[in-house]
Length: 479
Image (cartoon, rainbow, N blue to C red; front, side, top):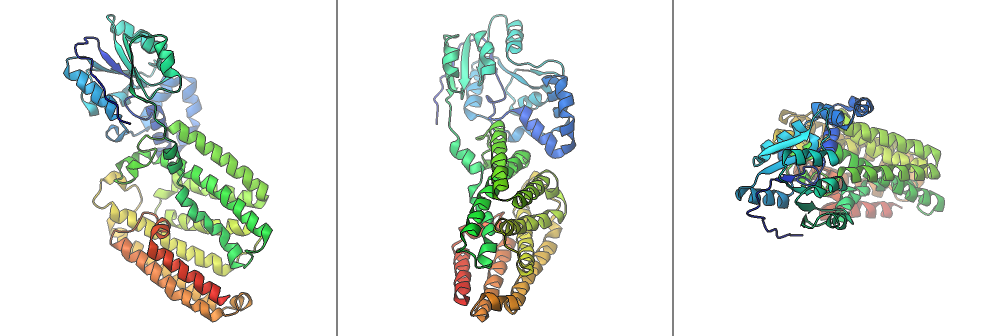
């Protein structure tokens, strides 16, 4: 929504602006917390100790451990344009925030138009009534104030004119009962679609692997097995979406430096950090409750999946080769979970085929990220790989895909196939189909034309979908 703003030319009162939620679509307290946890996960044990000494002290300690780049923060262009226009009329423009003084100074230095900066020190938290008293002492002749939250109500009460930015429901009416001069710079906007996008429902396609044990065992007509697989799919999807939210929160700084990921809902500020944390908590509780309802054994598998993905997000995704091995294991774990939920014993053929294939696809993911970031800023490349590793990654990945094809060939001539298929010789056609698709994936990755996630690419690529269709026709013909 575009808002036309008229500047208050001729007003000599200083124009004071809040930072969190006002100048930016985020909150530096939460930004610094996530950055500190991503860099030093162990500080989570110090948080209660710091908080006991007050929010101001907590903010100061987080600023010590965090690395927040002011150049990539999600600024509100409307607010910045208004401040710059008022600055040009000769008004004094002041940044007044409850964020830590070091972080606030970095933001002000980056923007370059603030005359003064007032922020929380290690002892004093500049928020609410304390902020109002401070401004009244600093500017005894009066001030105008731009804010966004109910914590600013007392500050607006002491202001000559109140400016609101995306006020919560009912906040604008509250301010108008206390002040005559009220202007809404940025109306409240709804970001429900952004939150849904942050859940990445398209990634639920990966969880279709849960149905593979039912299909491989030819039990798709079994009501209990199919019902358990559907419920398992839902449980995995809920927990997976929660993990995507947590991963994006921990990757905020890196995503903002990425040419494509900077438009993600949380990196762009369209979904708030607190909202994302609440949503993730609800999804995790719901997913685990459903998992326990399905079967305690499946519940344990889902816990293992969650711990593995959380470890990946916090630490392991920056560990050489461990990251791709874990990605391959997470894909295979979905198949294992499907077997546990439906009470189906998995064959060794299926497990080893999955490990080799998904190890290859995990290497494609890392290879593509490295190729696509070669001309980008150094911050986009947070993995443990370098440009000179590209031939090695490709060698491992291509070899692994060939190993998956070999396992498929050995399976086709095994005794297990004769027991399940009337025409097992037809299944030989799966080998060239698999060779074609994996070879194409690697060639496109080498050309820099591969999506960061090859499975997402496959779900959107018509030729890949046609290849999958051919494979299904072969399986049906063998039946």
